Structures are given as C-alpha cells and as structure tokens.
Length: 44
Image 1 (cartoon, rainbow, N blue to C red):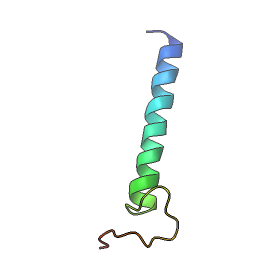
Image 2: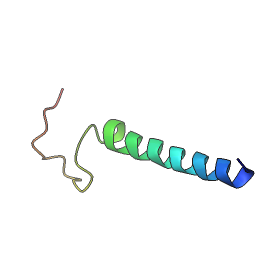
Image 3: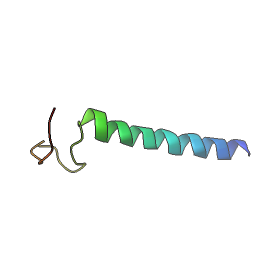
C-alpha cells in the first residue's frame, strides 16, 4: 500500500464518519432533506 492509498482510505473513512455524525447526532435521526424537523420520527 502506498501513501496515496492510505490518504484515500482516510478521506473515505472521515467522510463516512462526518455523514454519520451529521445524520444521527447533529440532526437526531431526522431525514437528510428535512430542516423543519416535522418528520414522523419518534423523539426521545
């Protein structure tokens, strides 16, 4: 594995972690296109 492979792997993993953070914790499970938070999602 070369340095470019490692950089691509880090980039992909960090992008996936960012999307996971944005969809689960920041928006608390709301759909990606919903900013009004009026979706039919069970709230805690």
